[in-house]
Image (cartoon, rainbow, N blue to C red; front, side, top):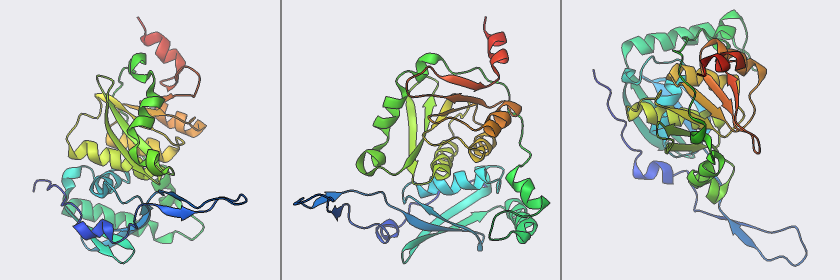
Length: 283
């Protein structure tokens, strides 16, 4: 069965949980006048696969179809977005429910994972099976040349321009895709850094774009979970505006994911591949 494009959220699904733009505030100074500011939206999204509840998370209520596809892929719940047949969004009070129809193969895998994680506790993951989920086996990506340095020029400024929600309200992360010409092709924003990358991956896959013909950019801290999502999505290069952790670099190198940190006032720093491999690849 072919993958069906997710239906847009009903007109009242987002409006039901998003208040009018802007909130009144008072400055903590004598004789100050009241002001008004836009704030980032946040809703609870409950995701169920073939009627089986899987996750509830706080997200920004935009591009939710992209998020569902990207989250499902990045969490290892599906192998391809073609495993998703349909997505229906509906409001439930102050939340939104996503009913996802997936293939029988994907649903079987999902149920197996739920059985393995049955021993988790409130303090975090527990048991060998849960550790396998936290440190999963991932495919090793084909080696890909690093992007041209010119494509990273003024990237921070271009990212700021592309972040429409952040410019209006702040308090959100972004994940972007820069194409083979060095142009920002997609930008997805969310209160959660993982959510932003999930939305970007979902958009890339749903639009059938070549994820290796360019690179992804994240504005947040580059943690191990983002490496997992990038590798599962098949991205060739991940650029982070914040420094990566040591474990992140180790996993990026082990899986052939190009990892670049873009500091505020320094040249881009290539952490993966290792510096020796970068030197050997140069003519």
